[in-house]
Image (cartoon, rainbow, N blue to C red; front, side, top):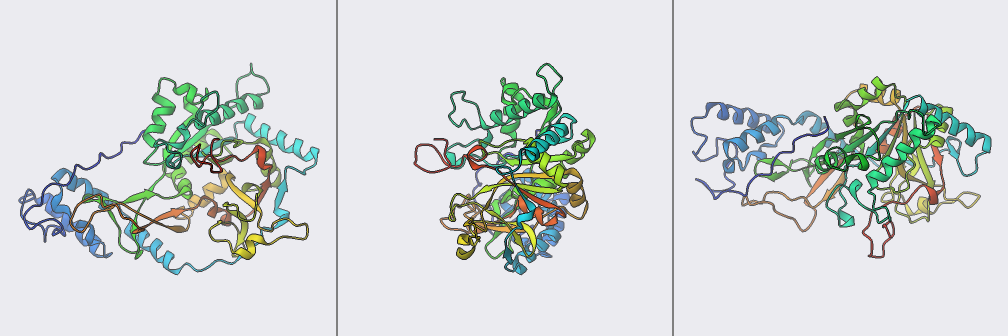
Length: 461
């Protein structure tokens, strides 16, 4: 139920045919070759060509003369699956996007675990454990990234961070869930509470993650002892890459589109489209904790955090911690055009970055660590209204593509295209009762982003 076949890569380009490489724009410009007499294939190309022309995307057919019948049919199916209406609307939104007005997040909507009264902390913990004991909590992991910056070409969750136990991030996190199941039950001899773990992957990490957690000889150990029925993997969607003009789609090969994961904000669509939200509802899940794979100190389904959110009747909440310094490269909680949001470190002004209140604390000092709370009711409502997508953001990248001479991959030396990404925290603006929960940095945040031995922060060493 977790695996999804990934298309095999195309073989190297064949030698030029007929009129030469790059001359094919659908059948009308292709030299006569293997497709002669194939009426069905001819009809398919004409149909797809007409669809692409309506959106000025017919350049995608420039190299179909290089494809075998099997490759061409697969490519036409891929092009037919494009929702060009929605894509065009997304690209137009990018053109019209103005600059947001940034203002401080209201202090009254923030609770601080560090300074809270013992009675409040005890109450939050009790409420959180009660919800877990009742099977009302689920954990969702965002794990679509590879460990490239770590010098590791596998899913980051499989990375051994160098502990004496040699456990991976996946196993360390799964064991926390397992421990919490027994803690909520109140007795190691009791039947543990149900606390399902949903793992969002990407095309780049899906197969290896499923293999690691379900098919490997040590899969049960990798899952921290969690029963297989309570662990589910699901891939996020991919988005076509677009040229720098924000109009033309890009090719990865003569017979495939250049694509990239749609950002961590694609989690909400993926929860719906892969039946995960439905599974949660069938299990009676009311509260969801979402986190990212690379924080080695993440407190999964933290009873204090869950309990506070239940007590505050929050439909969404963000766990935050004090910024280490004004220049720390983390996003911070704010209001964007009067709505809750996150201001990324790359977009905050120098004035706001250094602004302090009367106590000397940073006004924009509540750092986002990608540890979020949502109610299933809130997500169900959001996903029931339209496509369930968030605004797209532009990431300029060096994207391998097909050269003018038809050779591929052409690896650019400078940015030649953009990837369209949604941010997970943009959903905060949809919440009617958005809260923040401040926690101590030293016990909650230790991201694993850089390789050991190179003297950088946020590394295993």
